[in-house]
Amino acid sequence: MPVSELPAVTSSGTVPESADVLVVGMAEALGSSVLVGVPDDVERAWVKRTGTPLQEAAQALGALPKPGTVVALPGSPLIVAVGLGDVDVTPEQVRRAAGGAVRAAARLAGDRTLSVAVSLDAVEPEVIRGVTEGALLGAYTYAKASAEPTKRPVGALTIVSDASGAATAVAEGVAVAKAVCRARDWVNSPANVLYPETFADDVREAGKAARLDVEVLDEKALTKGGFGGILAVGGGSSRPPRLVRVTYAPRGAKAHLSLVGKGITFDTGGLNLKTAEGMYTMKCDMAGAAAVLAAVFSIAELKLKVKVTVWAALAENMPSGTAYRPSDVITMYGGRTVENANSDAEGRIVMADALVRAGEDDPDLLVDVATLTGACLVALGERTAGLMASDDDVADQLLDAAEQSGEPFWHLPIPEEISENLTSDVADLVSSGKSRYGGALTAAAFLREFAGEGRRWAHLDIAGPAWNGNSPRDYTPKQGTGFAVRTLVALARDLAG
Image 1: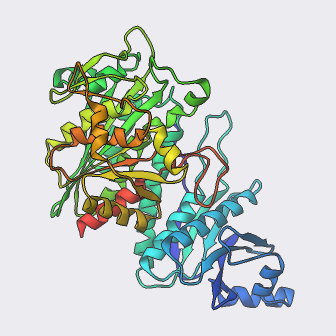
Image 2: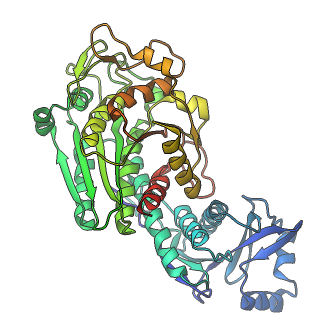
Image 3: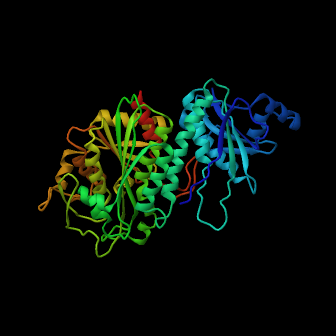
């Protein structure tokens, strides 16, 4: 499957002479605008050539501290001034600014492949990481299927900072951004290219390169093991399901984090067929699996002292004579039975099998990630993910990681009365609620039944922000976004201590 080629990223205390583009910032300090990150030699050269201070020239062309404002000043190198907001920047401020500026530079590349230097006066390690992540994510271009090679507008990135430890912070930012781009590539791959078998094969190859332990259960192993949920959902497709486990177990690990990802490589809705419009983007329905798998590769590259076990439940939900039906009773992994209420609520079925299996390893924290419900998208919009958890302490731990990473989550409850929706006359549980209200909460309540009594558990519903059907913005491209990867890496960093 296509893999997007990313720019080479280096750290430097000065702007390389080879740079075609220099990104600097416009910030607000004490009510005034100030240009930050401009090296003295660049300022002198600009004044000598134009007779005007660079800040004055930038403001004359419309440069403002307002985030999202980008102005290009012609010269060699081309200077791009991007709005930063307040001068006391956060990692997310510079992440967005760097991403937007690099995307703007890429649009000006023409037939060239540019070398871009990003100088935003970053000093703190977390801010340097933010600049690095934003720049690399903003440079991302999906290698689309074409007879012509994909053009790379940005071939090299230099993160400019003379701070002590800058090179380490840049390397850490690259490891995270690469993982996000890996998840984007998986999500963007068409379903005739990425399906359970090829997805599992790709993970196996990546795991071999990263020296991680990868186990793939095919349909025979799933049948032998009793994974009735995954087999039911995948039963309608000629491409059988897979369950993938990836393990990272460093010496000295201080905690065990288990991650479960929904990997529906294409979701037609099964016999509860979706509309044509609703089906078109359903290659994205494996974004949860993409996030957890990509995250473990980043965690391993960062050598974080935390054990991580990832479970990716991969299936294709198709209508056929062998598809599971509404009203079917499924015997799940572990023995509980589920009445299928809606074949388009397939994600929770495959996730339930994986959650029970993950719990058998007794992790300290179990987190599942899924593009699970349209109800969550209706509740929180296209850019905010839902978070539901076993208790407030777990929710706070996830929210802290999300804040560090710059990814927006909102804590939603699982009211006790929601569980009443899951009672069945013919099985232990029914997969969907009797009421159309609170669909995201009902789905979380269903998953909680399989996470394990007393288990520290969180559910991340990323149905909205996993896919961007609108125009690109800051470091977020159109289509797959790689959402939740950064939060999971931040969570692992916290658990590692």
